[in-house]
Length: 235
Image 1: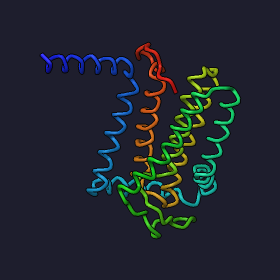
Image 2: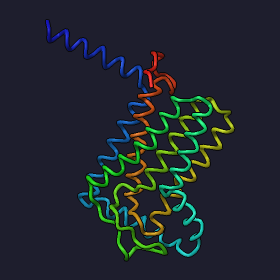
Image 3: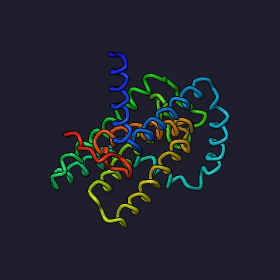
Image 4: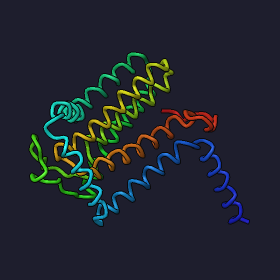
């Protein structure tokens, strides 16, 4: 009886979790599984053909869009992303949106800490001087891309906040367009300058997507259509 009761209680709990996180949970788990598979294939060398083909295609642009790519890669540095996050936090606190400020701090700041941890786990070396272009090859670890992961975390968190505060639709769509273009540009620029392999960039996007989805599901379980209308947890 005790075993069956425990199984029943577990089933009830899992159903509640599913109703509460019908979209955010699959998004987070799916991104995490995709990242884990990419990382495993990277370690086994199975991503090498993909990296080689993409690197060659992007290398063919060199000399024609240097200034544009430099703007993207500088914009994705830790200082500009920190400045954007700090200004957004200040605005949210002035507007007394403490919950949203907490969400942004965890979504963006937590992603930075996660990137540091993942780099230490995978210990992938940078492409090296042979692929470096204009900028010197960084000496830090490569997988996943910090620029891409940081930009994804900041942009993703800000887009969620705009949805939460019910910003006008034109503002949300404009933010999606600008944020998406920024993310793509930053990712391409890291490969363009030989600072990362293409799989580093893909890994950064997937890791950040998993993190932001998880934080969103935890703090805003009713955000997406079809999710349970249960009370939200306190910040």
